[in-house]
Image (cartoon, rainbow, N blue to C red; front, top):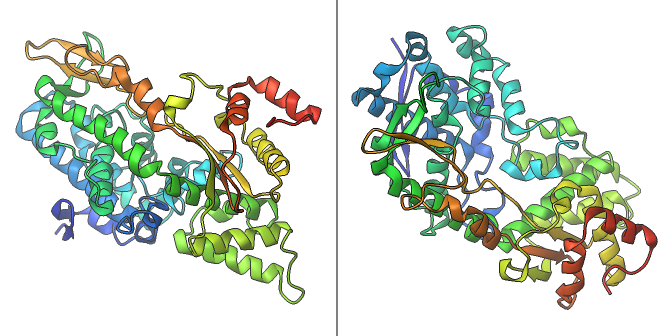
Length: 450
């Protein structure tokens, strides 16, 4: 008899989990998600935002199960091939496991860049799914089931319901927007789920094209609320200045620990939030046993950063440039060259008379925030693909995506040391300059901020 569990979720009410999914809940790799906060350091600004990836995974599983049931009830699944119908239990498991590989404090570790970490969270998920007891459960659906679920998580599966797990309308977004809004106590995450789910269907872009998830015209207003809610949550919660200050402090702490040998890259794959901070703390104590440590050394800087994070002594803003103060197109090197950003941070500290490591530059980016790649089924049966241009007169938010993304981003320079706000003009001139010019100016030794 299949195992059935009912879990009370503060967002969706009773969530029914059954069969293999119920068994996966008890796996250590999945239970670990109880100790990984969904929003990283947002709880330092919104104290209610302490919900975890475990709850979120349950929510996505619930929404995907609801969506599949609704598609079946409306007759849309009759278009599926037999093998795709047989794969529906795997799609549900993909929903449950989509975030199993997240690092401590969720996306914060990934800001270190690919060279510093053992893989993105999708790659770490593949590791966890290849280990018992999850592997043993998944292989009931075939020896390659972990790989098939990995493809769903990465958006690389050919299954027609791929879009439920990863895509423009994946139900991950609906859950995290609603859940993050609820726990943070803000009104920005409203998404009309009861309107959106019944609007889901399956369609082909044309003869010879594959079947894929689509939205009917009646769901466009609900889709628009999803996109605008996403913009509002990034602007007001995810990129709040104090959330970014705490995230940068954590990233600097982990980078310092890696550079000093306190941590190895592989140490990052596995620990939960508090486990990683405790591990760094133990390594600091061990390295300084007996003789202590020089506060100016890498170990000393790591200890100071750890204490700042634990005690919420966050860096303050020296420079802040909002979208109206920034040109529409800035050079892309700040998001591609962490080494150059780090060199400029050291140079800024020197020229402003601050200690090495005191300055941090931040300009978060998510270009695909409001992009769409989704089939729309018009009331007359015509099928069109919604893209970054949206559909004039029907759904125009994607067309505004670049402008909204620009207005949500803020360029900030933080400092741990008390200092008066700095003139933003030299900073803006530096950020606007081409990568090669910035490198040449930095290498010349001439002042950068005058």
